[in-house]
Amino acid sequence: MSVQRTYEEINQKIRDGKVVVMTAEEVIALAEEKGLAKAAAEVDVVTTGTFGPMCSSGVFINLGHPRPRMKIEEARLNGVPAYTGLAAVDIYLGATALPPHDPANADYPGQFKYGGGHVIEDLVAGREIKLEASAYGTDCYPRKKIETTFRLSEINEAILFNPRNGYQNYNVAVNLGDKTIYTYMGILKPRLGNANYCSAGQLSPLLNDPLLRTIGVGTRIFLGGGIGYVAWHGTQHNPGVERTPNGTPKVPAGTLAVMGDLKQMSPKWLRGLSYLGYGATLQVGLGIPIPILNEEIMSFCAVKDEDIVAPIVDYSGAYPQREPGNLGFVSYAELKSGQININGRTVPTAPLSSYAGAREIAQTLKGWIQAGKFLLSRPAAPLPSVESDLTLKPMPQRVLE
Image (cartoon, rainbow, N blue to C red):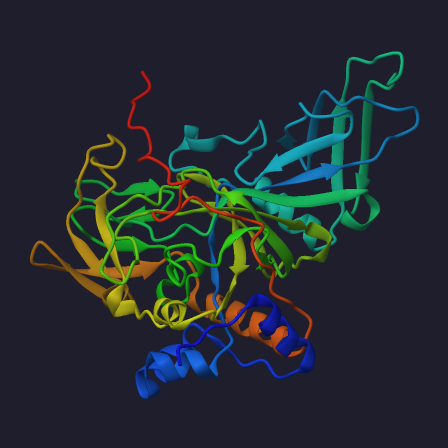
């Protein structure tokens, strides 16, 4: 008889301490040894993880009112500007924001030593943050200036809200040009001197649920060391792309918008990063449990690095100029071997995301579930997918002039 489970049945097993959980890495060997049917019968939940740079990240902060009250017009946290076009003392700090005095790439390649991602890490670490804010003043909010310090524990709310995280596959970046270039995919040496990639491959959340059967609005997740939720599909979500026979996309596809309470999180899993010649960002730890509702979902979770491919893209010309096509496809097994072949040439590879971190996140989430500290949540609404009535059309290709 084929395996059929419900979220309620799995959650009851979690409460009873009888749930069987494996990471997406561990379940591969079980599926190979016993077959998909037996593996699906034995395992209730598969955990995934990724720990890499996620630029489209930030935090909503409610600072609380000073005395007298204030409607903040401009605000800086440790010198980094935050967006204030919300309510009186609500602000949003983006991971890539830079202080006005940062020389950026005026002294190329710029170092970008401190930006929004670093402020977020300092907040989570409990460090003191300097607030500088000004306002035009109103009858109900008369204060026009404040300069003070605070810690995360002393403010009303801080909500990590990331509009685009957990990309479902991504480019392998190379440089066909004659000079070194500095990109969000790291430093790329000229004439195919190296190749950088950014995915946990077989551990990556959306590559273990490629058709979005179990991940949707309201899915409970590991986020930044705490518990978070999928809030919506992420920006640039584009599920209608070419896929392999196992359902995994061959190019960048789905994304997630995620959110959670920053006060629950850890600086171990939210780290400010500086990219030479490019900018500042935030490294985010993200993990998602996949309920094994049936044998098909087990088949997705048993995907191996050798069965997942990514496109090789030239970042010296094709990418910045939005030229279509690529230099071919390469598997994550090849990428993780340390070298790939491009146009007959052996090219060294390096990851921007941490596979060791992804493995630890998947193991941590596994431990939470086994200890009864983390229940699975049935999605309240599906995300647009290649199979749903909500399928998105391909992303518009209009070029802004």
